[in-house]
Amino acid sequence: MSRYRLVPTPAQETALLGHCGHARYVWNLGLEQRLMWRPGRPPTPGRRGAGPASMRGSGSSGHKPNGSSG
Image 1: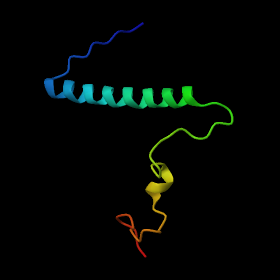
Image 2: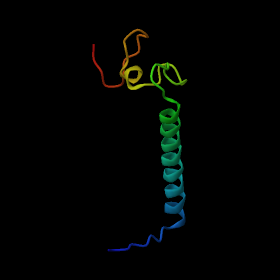
Image 3: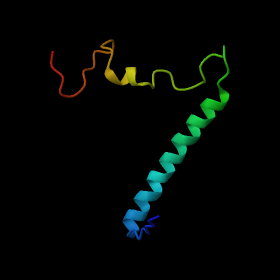
Image 4: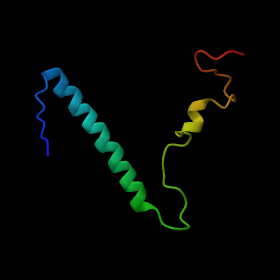
């Protein structure tokens, strides 16, 4: 088994701590939603329209993503 040691610079350490914090947040959010789910129960509370479909642009707002034509 190989072992590796990280010796980050102060800037890299700050970035790593930020990435780890974000990963922990997403993990805990997913775990919470999984534990709340029960058959027949409505979806868990969350931000309405925060999913991938809302990011694609439905065209209802008249806003077009950068780089789109037409």
